[in-house]
Length: 259
Image (cartoon, rainbow, N blue to C red; front, side, top):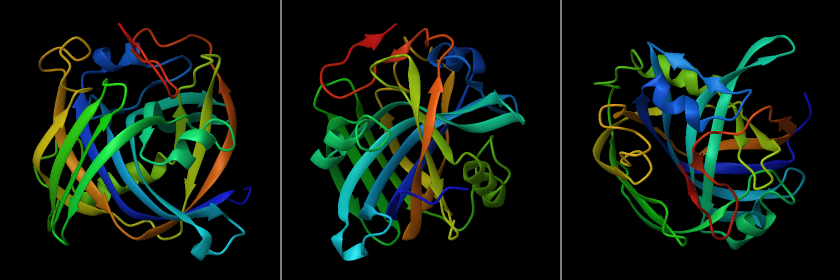
């Protein structure tokens, strides 16, 4: 395995998960990707991520940058040379960081839009909200750290949920070219997640009845990661064999919602 190109610390990561009807997700995915199913559901969600000490892997942590970021994610699978492979498809990334917006898709994979974040945290309660400058996306999530994962129809406890997301360590991002997907892999020897409980959640993406008709996208669970050192490895582009039928156009600047 090639060494990581970037190093950082996940200071805080909320994985807000929805269970979704597969037929609602399938049009959002470009081929060769298809929904990865858990107990008959597709798995989608929002990653609300604060990274610290972001720098080239060879550089000292003191030179690293800090940023608030968000990504909409759909768990996917595809046919690789050695069989079925798994990861996530990211139709949209957003960041408060100018560096991420300028470098994403150029110096490292993953084009980012511009978003403004509101964050309030205590040891037990986390609220992350953001709106994008293009007006297409708004998210507001409040979660509490819990002793165990309860109420999920996707996962039978925190160990199963942790294993699922750890296995989906490759993220494929939509690009403006529409010809291929940018790829990035998360690497860590210190993987650790905590169960959470949703207090309140609003998402213009998942609450949109045109994209997800009533009953097709249901809030399922939330996981919390804090202070986890990670590396990021760029992957070769994944060529597309067919575009998504619906979803977000990718890339910074003005975007259109594709129906």
